[in-house]
Image (cartoon, rainbow, N blue to C red):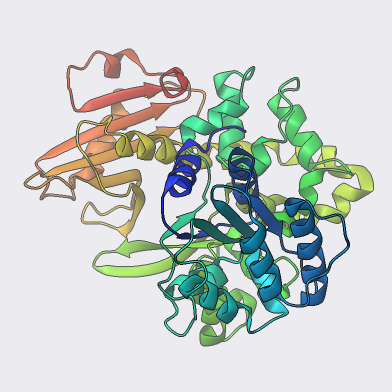
Length: 462
């Protein structure tokens, strides 16, 4: 398995604990939860049941079969209840510590309203004095969060740890690349981000363009159905959700603009936007116009943003066999998408360096920043910005990204400095400039410790 060292380390520490541990593991579909848990299970000889989107009786039958196999039974016993199944696991477990993992836990609960209360009873009584590691996992993010955060939920505050599985770290995602040059790596990451589901599909014996054509633009491309694979259950086949995602990809990003384009009441639309935000399909951001703040939404997943921009309304055309011609007709637009998405990769790279203490200061969360009408009488867009978290530090981190076939010159830095001048309270600013092709002599020759010039070679040097 590639990467996920931190996640496995946490699970192994809980396994080594001499007391009962109860973990909640969650994250979006295809993000790698099951892969991580399966690897952990192999290392501990644990038991994992993958719940199905089926009736409770069907799940209980499958669960029974897996428990029989785990305990070495030869009969065809089907437990009469979930309690009987748990009791038999506890009674006949011959491992030093019982590791019990239930993946896609929400599926199991859909057929039995009492199941969460049953688990709660075992957590409070039968499990608490035993060396057991219980893990409930799922991709229904709002459901899994409610287990921990909803005061009316029977399992509220009973877990001893939680783990959200997100995209891979920038450094770990590089484990998918053994042959690709740095420009191809950047293209892949700008299109797919550090999402393991997409990166695992790359064939490095082909070029970036050949991979894109095969994975997206041919009749049998696997990613033509990407929303069905990665979006939460019930989103990809919901007309309103799909319409919202499509309109956001086309530039209608504020609730007001979406309400107008979709002809939906703002309050009605807000319910759907909140759901998509809670399910982590959308990110909620802010843009400023003087002192006025406007909320807008973006699609979190890089490839889904690409999908709804270019593929969503053209799947029929691609399935008819016209995908390659369509690709060639929008190639320049795809290049623009990649150059813009490069910012996200740079933020991933800088965030990891910040977390690991490899910057000159320790900063807060790095975000982009937009002002429509600043006191400079022009709009300002900063690719990445964060302020120092150290006490008494008055330092700002600023990032500029240029993914184009041209060196970054001193003029780019001077324009950036002018933009940053609106943040008057900061006495020190560290400028990080990222370039696809490199830097002109007039910027390479300046002597300023606060200016950091980073090429693709610098980013991928290991």
